[in-house]
Image (cartoon, rainbow, N blue to C red; front, side, top):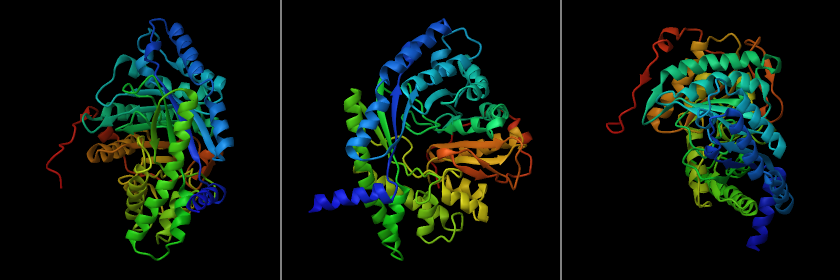
Length: 452
């Protein structure tokens, strides 16, 4: 009877509450694809990706049919390309991005992550070439995603890289201006980036990872919202307990699918990412969970506390259901990809300052936020520095995926389509950060004791 009840409960979660496996991501090491001849390196990269991921989409579709669980995305992450390409004498890495794009198309995945560089402490030659290649790479490819890690708790913040990324984001916005600057939606700037994140656009296969691995990301904001509707008015310990139990059920399903996918692809199972990832669809919103707790509109006072409770309870419940938890694991708060967040911005209850405060307690950071296209490079860099400081001081991952939409200003709205959704253009501070960003250098690592 209990098993039958569990089965019926899971069916309801899938059919009515939009429960899904958000992504199966195959991580592939490309460290053995280095070559002094860039062309030879790219041939090795293409052959290795298409060989390992040949059956990734097919296996995902088989599992969907057999278990009845939607698996929304099948994706690939690879070793940061700056580590692979710098062995060559190439002066530009756009051809490497094209190779990744061609390999992704050949195996049928919708995104491939890893056109990335790790510069938290300093640049190597290859790091600088890769970062300078990002705008063109994202403008001439469809499926390539890029990320740059500019700080971590042990190294501090590379402010030269922070300043650099403000310019790179603006140039990417310009080169993809015919598509609402969508290139910036495929570019993330991290602090404390993790090596096993299965979610795009920030996924890459870290140097400490194995040869090939399957990582899985689960979702389920609608399921948590539906569970909280049943405890309306109950105290917060009941709310936390309800979320924990729901997260356990969501995670258990993800663990089953992830291990089976790894088994059929004959590669090790890596981690399960316990994230609540929203979509623009009605009933699949993190913002609506916060409002269910009693906030009139997301962004109102109390929102940060509600989000902190949600994030913590999801981790506590999910960690019991999986043998290996990793990635970003928490609640995502992207604006354009969350119906409730979009509405909150339009109503005036949510602004960038409140979003920044919310990033102190959740995964990951300022995410999918559209801002005026004429925002100065230095202002974008200062926003990156603020988020990096939150991550570095608090020993957590933070990120910025912000889109200065070319030709758009306050009052406009931009539509990206699909899971990327749509977003009203949000206001940024009109006060200059030029002198701050132009200092350059490195913000020292914080002290780990003597905290209050």
